[in-house]
Length: 126
Image (cartoon, rainbow, N blue to C red; front, side, top):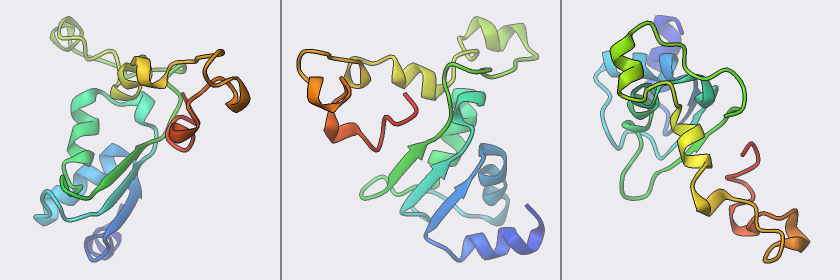
């Protein structure tokens, strides 16, 4: 993102980008609750702290966040053995997709591709 596009993004309430691009918005002084919605692209590549930087800009009261990506592809690339020791080789997207809420249930949701239809929009990549 260039300086001009960062400034333009700061005047919006919905933002779409990678964690790196969204993290740059902190340099402009934007803080929690600035955005109502955030679509974080390539969330399967990011460490959980990187993802949390982007989500930190979203309103805790009425905001919504979408993590987009594929948790089955290349995960976060770590340069530090300490980061690996703390489990940062697993992205937030992967960790959340393994929760029972997003799991397949062929009996209960047979008519909906085996996934809870209330989560359909949220679990498209899961």
